[in-house]
Length: 183
Image (cartoon, rainbow, N blue to C red; front, side, top):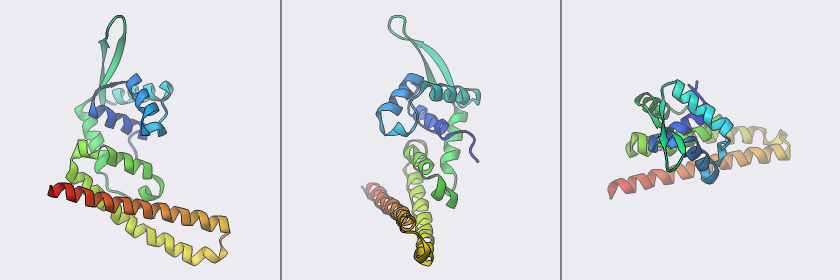
């Protein structure tokens, strides 16, 4: 069960890297590959307030040049502990099926929060779970292909190919970490 939204974890990961204002977060969500998150102030500011109420971040109003002010958010030790606990959760089969975006977000911040050794261990666990899950999908396809509609069968094949691509990515990433470690 999640303590709070995926948006909350994304905010914690970003704020772990450096203190940010809501406007800074809005720019990140609008201008980077994190566009999957809403850059709406109506989503960002309530999430930041919730994190502050939980004690995971604290804010401070900063005076900038002229009359401009900004509220910058900084992660607390409680926030760091929560972020690390979320990242350290074992990968469940349900995560592979329903929460792939969350798994990749957990991984995206992992080098900075937990270190490269944990990132490598995560990838190994991820690859192992994928290696175990893909054959179950293939067996299902083999057993039911003859009674499936063409569109249903093609959709399932697409899903299998996506999992296989993720597995290939994970194996390649593991090799890259290992090469880097040797250097």
